[in-house]
Length: 380
Image 1 (cartoon, rainbow, N blue to C red):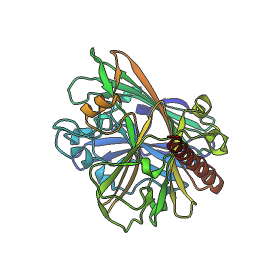
Image 2: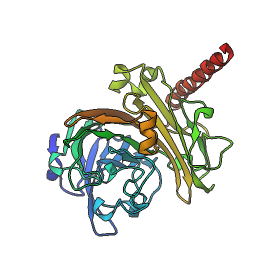
Image 3: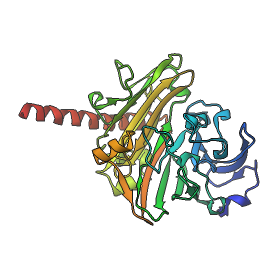
Image 4: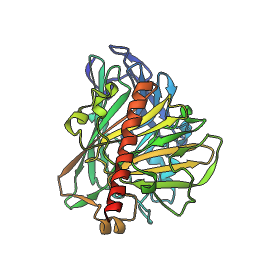
């Protein structure tokens, strides 16, 4: 296939590539009659959609034909023009994506104009910048998203690259944010990632590189016996449970054969962390792996109000108020014209060896931190 522009793809026409890979472009009309363009990418193992009008966010994820991201109706998917983000709770009306962008402007505790997630997920890609390249079954889609924040003037843009390699069970996403304004601006991006499809309908657990006692419960929600538990989808619980924590480093992920093609694992082997959601029998798992230089913190969000939500949210800072972020020294600033790059790997596997090895490495990271804390306690 080589290199093609988005505008040259005929709608609803599957383009077959090498090594069982294919792509297809479709349209979706939301309840307000606004149209979104959705690109499906598949390597025959992993299939996912990219929503052009929603920051090139990932809409749905399928593994071997089965949906592994959360079960939200497409009626939830709204065009940015269908949402007024200054209305309270408006961001959740269009909250549909399996991987939704946070930021890049500072997100967190909302005030009268800011939403908890920022405006990134409601920003459109410039269609003239979208390219799809294919080489020997490896597919990359790229584009530039214009971000206005809460004004009518572009404050940022971000260049997005999403790569799915042949025979791979994961995709990689790279982004470079740039400050387009003439002022120094704070930046705080991340992702709201939903890997909680039917494979955990009977329950499961989070596998996290942090002891449970270091997971801080937010927003005065009731405590749980097990913070890392994933309940049956028949178990409804409100209010939402949100936990924030600083993940430990996870060593040796590059030794697992499933991840041998991930470049940043070799570039930053001592600065990588990982999180996973597994079913009750450890036969299926979704995972998130990234350099800590990109996203040094994590938020978990758990809720079931008829639609089970078990989110992993890698982020630059905790979702506190802007004032609290300043006090804690968590804000990052970009000078005019300055950029910042981030990387992340998201995938799924039903290979027991891959799941078990990643499980052991993540658990070792949590146990090691706990052991060190106990040693320090005894030294005092």
